[in-house]
Amino acid sequence: MKEELLNRQAKRFKSVITQICFKCHSLLSRLMFRLLRSSRERGREYRGKEGQRSRVSRKKREKQRERKKERKRKKKKKK
Image 1 (spheres, rainbow, N blue to C red):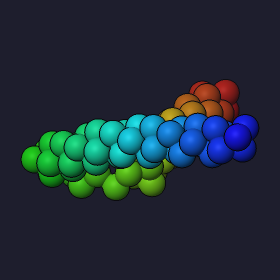
Image 2: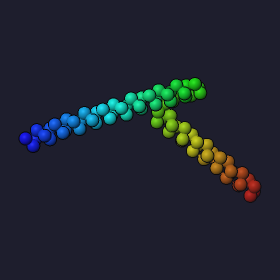
Image 3: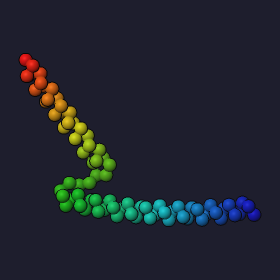
Image 4: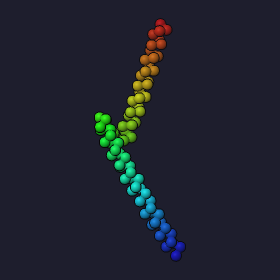
């Protein structure tokens, strides 16, 4: 009796979770589609997390370059 009740609850729980996951999945796919479309219109394709990562690292590299240039300028001024 108790086991049967637990099984029923587990099945109900599983169905609720799959419904939630499907909802999230559909929302995410819609969001991704919108992002893809908008980024294409701007002339840059959206590549998910990889694209974001490369953009961030590019910014970091540019900052490092700037710092390096500043250091060189300071050294030249000292001489």
